[in-house]
Amino acid sequence: MPPQRSDDNDKLEQETIKWRRSLLDAFKFAKQGAVRSLRLQRNLRIHWTAGMAVLVWNLCVRPSIILVTLSVLTIALVMSIELLNTAVEHLTDLATAGNYHDLAKWAKDASAGAVLVSSVGAVAVAVLLLVDTWPWHFLLFTGENRIGAGESAVAVVLLIIWGLSGGFRKVERRKQHDD
Image: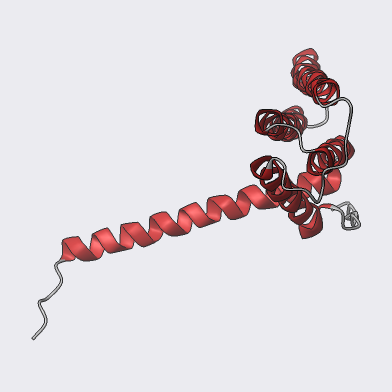
C-alpha cells in the first residue's frame, strides 16, 4: 500500500504549481506588452528596424565577439527604454485623464529624454562598429568568429519572431462609443 500524502506535501505541490503558472503568466503578459508596443509605437518599430540592420550587418561583416555583444546589449537597452517610455506615457495619460499638467509633461519629456540618450549611445556604438571593422569584408559564409555570428543570428531570429508575432500586423482601431 503506498504511503499517504500529508497535507503539507499537497500544499507544497499546489504552491509549486501556482508559482510555475504565475511565472508563465508573467512571461505571457510581458510578451503581450512588447508585441502590442511594437505594433502601436512607431519609434519602437524604427528602433527594431535599426537593430535588425545592425545584427544583419554583424552577420555579414563578423566583428569581434566583444563588438557583437556590445551591439546586442545596446539594442536591448534602447528597446527596453523605449518600452519603459511607452509605459510612462500611458500611465501619465491615465493619471491625468487627458488633462494638461506641467508635471505630466515633465514626466513624459524626461522619459523621452532617456530614449534619446540611449539612442545617441547606440549611434556611438554603431560608429565604433563601423570604424573598428574598416575595411569591411563580406564574411557571411566563412568560419570566422562563429560565436559572434551565432549570437547575431539568435538575436535576429528573436527580433523576427517578435515582429511576426503581431508586431507588424495592421492595427485595428476601436470605435469609441458615447454611453
